[in-house]
Length: 107
Image 1 (tube, helix red, strand yellow):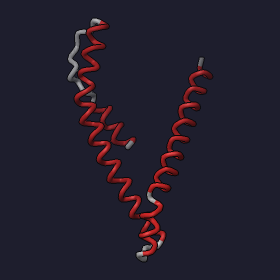
Image 2 (cartoon, rainbow, N blue to C red; image 1 turned 60 degrees about the horizontal axis):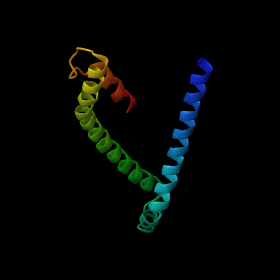
Image 3 (spheres, rainbow, N blue to C red; image 1 turned 30 degrees about the vertical axis):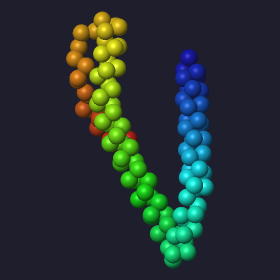
Image 4 (cartoon, rainbow, N blue to C red; image 1 turned 60 degrees about the vertical axis):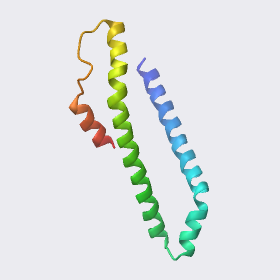
C-alpha cells in the first residue's frame, strides 16, 4: 500500500508538471507578438522577463484572493452536506487558522 500511494503521488506530480509545461508553452505562443513588440521597443531580455514576472504575480494574487473568497462560501455548504450525511454535530463555520497560515506559506 505505501508503494501504491507513492506511485499515485508520482503520477499526480508528473501530470502537474506536464500541465505547467503545456500552459507555459501556450502562454509563450499566445504572447509571442507582445514579446516581439517589447523587444522592438528597446526592452532587453531582463526587462521583458521582469515585465512577465510582474504579470504572473498579479495574476497569482488575484487568483488567490478569488479562491479564498470562494472557499469561504463553498466550504460551509460542503461541510453542511457532509456533516448531515455523517450525523456530525459541529459548527460548519470553524476555520482552522493553521490551515490558512500553511496555505499562505505555500503560496
